[in-house]
Image 1 (cartoon, rainbow, N blue to C red):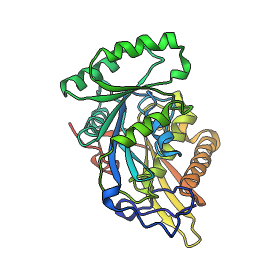
Image 2: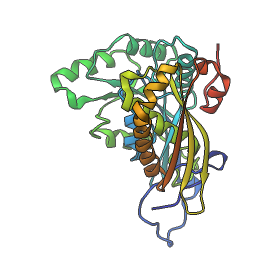
Image 3: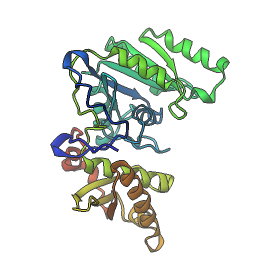
Length: 327
């Protein structure tokens, strides 16, 4: 297991296992390496986070059955051979109504501006609905040429799949079409190899063992939010957040992490706590295990729960997660 490289603000951002490199081989020169960014866009629950995690080979971006689980731009870094690809997992694109929704959708579209390749991920098992059509129309306005990845094809027969692919191909915005299953990995390797060939020549942007540019506190908070959504699902409304408070690394290598779960109402707070504190204990146990696996060390996780009906209107929340505090 290789040690974690330093990311933004001196944060350690994850680990990657692999074979030790031979000391007889010199490091690659900038002229022989390739690096670039790939933005992954799509409707909520299209499978973007699952695809990112499959590309990287471990969980970086959280997933859950709840719509709009991804709120922040999550960067997953893949380094293979002489090529480094930085995959940008974006919030789902939908008709935004609240301030938070608008900030999320804006962040998703902004991710395409400097990308070397853009993937539109579509759930092939569902009909091409208004959300997908709206995204396609926006890409037409931008005169963009993008890659189509039809996801969840393992749930469909060839006869069901071909008409969907044909209809989307007729839009004229797709340079290439891939049929994949982000869950099983079918077709993902072919897509990855295709993307590696599209990366421009140049030096890598990140260390060889770095797997994300997100600070450790944010990654840890996202792991807890995943458990919050997975364990409560429909019991807990969308309006909930996990805010990092502190992360301390001890001399023995362990981490002590404090986080605050914020919900909109007092009755939501009671739901998160559960009877006799049973639910918050379960959330903490599962989140602690995921965080420990991500950072490859023992984790001590302490959670508090606070009700704040105005949390979505507080600028500090948006700053913490790199979102724009708009109107």
